[in-house]
Length: 480
Ligand code: G6P
Image 1 (spheres, protein in one colour):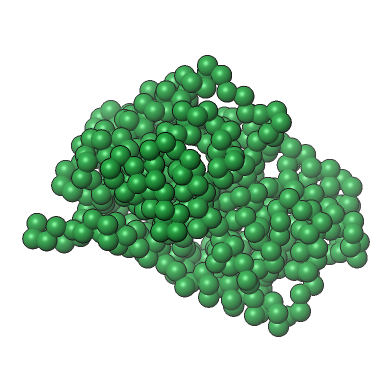
Image 2: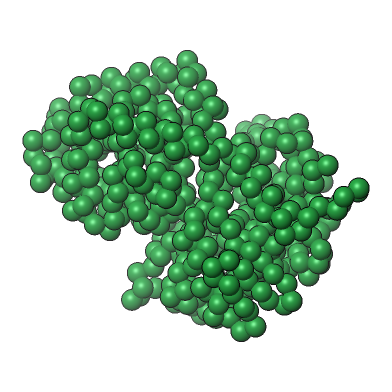
């Protein structure tokens, strides 16, 4: 019999708000992790444990209600006091760990760690412990699937509570190279690496991130690393580093795109585009996505190749993200200001070069996918990047993918995409030109290659590969 699964992540598959009349409104969770995982867990024995993020979630958690997201998928919230949650999620996870793993600091000036950081870190440790304790309440012998940097300390804590537990930790993000991880206070850096190494399997989206982890582990006292075999030995135990790239569910995405309402939206977007070419970007509005340099590269393209002025429209769909934090808000404002400036310089009454929409509307993005001639995905660093995989599945114009070499998706899609160094505006401007002027037969060939490469992997294998990996190091007991 298959082991039951217990998933732990900060953001869960379900969240609540209170409506105007006091009624509970149920929302599906959003973001890369939930999108990627929701398609995977179509089994009948899953418990998904996540933070209570809204006041309504807290209410639901206090009532101790069991939530069925779908048949076979139970959800539970971990209750975290508000002040502690702010320190754990906003300050440590989003301001520090996100920035570390995506190399986002302006390193000559920031970060600066002080006593407040120490205080926030203690809250982070407490929240991770609360998760570990909640997981420990689960009966039977499940496989624990712990997700992402928010919960990087959970594997070691759970191991202490349950030495024989089967634990997988999976990072949806990159993992910082050792030199950059060393920016973190030593206590934090050591705890992160040791914490993750409490798992049996430490999973990453791409080999490069796993290698970074191993290099950092190698520097720690009492830890022995076999880089080639991806093994970490510590505290008399062994953990294995493995790669499990996430995949998108082609059938369900295409099903969504084929809905009559989305087809109608796609038609509206086609008439908005008219006989011009269309460049598209779809992202969360946050600094790792490199939206600002994307605009500057587009500006350079327009000034370097003026024949394209008036002949291309850049549709930019951005979903708001982590707006409570200055770094994210200021970055968003800067992006919008640059787009406005570029429109002022190049546009006129008949043509607005960049059309930015800040909206949480996944379905609109899916409708836009069908229409682009070129899709730009140029993150500074990205664990995987689902947009790069979703676009080619739905696009109907043999659109070209411009893809950062620093996105995890590059490993799978790079040879069919136009590669860019995300910091190189000149190369990116030329890639835009090359994409828009590519001859039809080459476009068709690359589009076919992209679509095939995306479909070569399914969300189900992402999960089964992890379960097989954990069984390979801890075989299931027969006869239970
Ligand atoms: C990335 C992380 C996910 C996270 C998502 C959205 O994809 O890897 O763990 O869910 O961003 O971020 P948020 O802070 O809104 O949950």
